[in-house]
Amino acid sequence: MTLKKLCVMALCTFLLTLAFCGVGKSAPEETKNVYHIDYGGLTIDITAPIQAYPGENISITVTTEAVTQIDIEYIYVRIYGLVNATTEVTLSNITHIEDSPLTFHEATYDIAIPDNLSPGLTYGLISCKWDFMDSPEKIPSSGFALTYIKNTALEQLQAEYDELNATHQSVIQENTELKSGSNEVDSTRNLMYIFIATTVVASITVVVLLLRKPKKVWV
Image 1: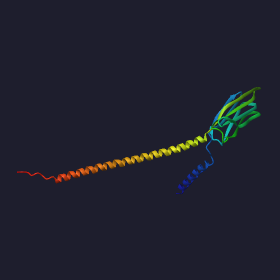
Image 2 (image 1 turned 90 degrees about the horizontal axis):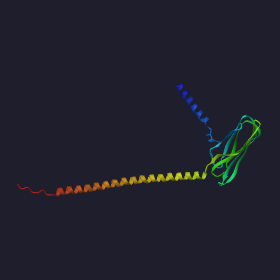
Image 3 (image 1 turned 180 degrees about the vertical axis):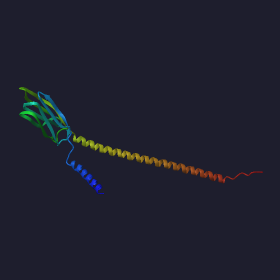
Image 4 (image 1 turned 90 degrees about the vertical axis):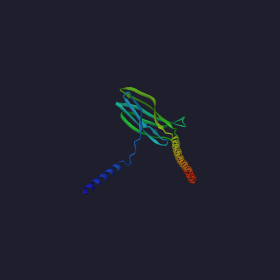
């Protein structure tokens, strides 16, 4: 009995430990690589969330690596979005590296998404200049798609439509069940009428047979 109690207590302790280990951990944010270049001894990667809502903050990560130490003059990243679907607004001006040697450098930048930002893709421009083996290298401003901003109003309308559609389907189902029940009542009523009519006819037949006098038989 004592051994069994110890096993139960150990199992409970193990389960509680597993439960508390998960407390405070949130699901990892789904990201994707939105920019990659490998040129002139320099590799640049940019990752960002796949989607976000207006009013949220997103984090993008810029990773730069060199095959050997190189001198970076600048690496700039600019992030843009649209307001009213036509007006470009700057969301962030990032100076990733400026006038510095580089072997490896990675940094994460937080970007606030305005409440009035139009649904659709945000986008960025990256430009950089560096020296590799005494040779100047440069990447002119290159564009890339970033994070998709979801349409909150459309999603709300979709949720309301789904709710109304579910209610509509429920009403149709109830109406079908009522009609089915009504048909069953009608069938029962018809059978009852047939039974009554048959009974009446049978009763009349019996009465007529009983009242009919037998003919005299002459011997």
